[in-house]
Length: 80
Length: 80
Image (cartoon, each protein chain N blue to C red):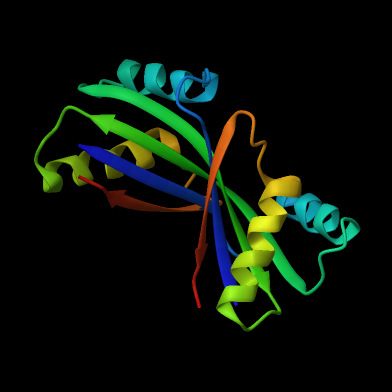
C-alpha cells in the first residue's frame, strides 16, 4: 500500500525557500505570481494492506517524526 | 488561481533524505516500511485566471527553474 504525506508550513510562518523561488521566477520574467510556498512530500511504500490501519499508522508517523506540528500542517493520502 | 507542483526524484536516483526518514521511522518502532522517497511540493498563487494558460505557465516554470529534469520528475495540478 502506498501513502503520500504533504507537509507544508502553516500560514504566517516565514517561508524563505518559497520567497527565494518567487524572486527567482520573477527574475526569469514570470509575472503575476502572488505567492509561493514550498513544502515536502513524502511517499511511503507500506507492507500494511488495510487502508484504515495504514492511514492511522502514517498519521502516527507524522505526529512523531514527519511533521513539526508547531509550525507545519500535514495531509495524508492513501493511494492503493 | 492556485497551482501545485510535485517534484520527486526519478526512480533509481539515490534519495538520502528518504533513506534517513526510513531509518528514523524504523528506529521509532514503525515496521513494514518498504521504501520512503522524499520530494518537494511547491504551491503557487497566480494572477492568471485561465486554467489552460496557468498550467502552460507553470510547466514552463518547472522546465526552467522548479525541477531538474535530469534527475527529477514533476507533476502539475491546477486547483481553482
